Length: 189
Image (cartoon, rainbow, N blue to C red; front, side, top):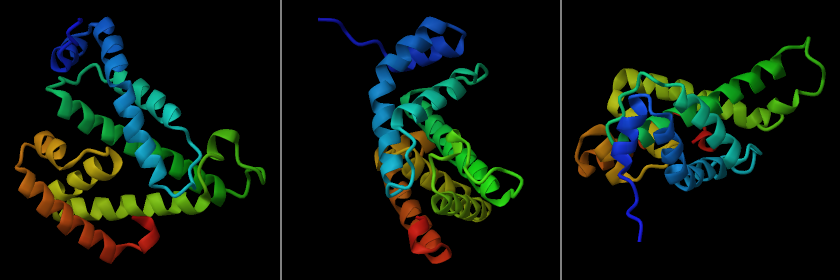
């Protein structure tokens, strides 16, 4: 029976420039990334038709271009993957929003912008602005929301990624959610 390679070792090899380690790493984490991205897309109530595979492929391209990153461990990798997935969704929302606002564009949006409803694009942008405001008040709480909401990390994984206790993550999560629910319309979060 083959012993699965150590994820941390693969991450470290990849950060030192070993392309084969990056390929092996992606094969190992692909299903988990797909589950995370599918969960994020499901959270958008059907208004995003972007496929989990497309989100993973885009995330992989962005992650693989981060040659300067010194990967520490599994939690660090998934924390950065969560940030990348958030940025991909926000980029699409911004493009969708700008296409809606620009009267010079044709009445039908380009195919790559049709994957998100105008309403969901507006919700994501509103959520992002609220998260930016929360980050000014409590950077760790904003990071907890990003890791849990966009990255799909559980309490324990988030605690490892942030190097805090699970109790701290639970407290931050509850406070951040209450703050966001107060700030945002119900459908945005």
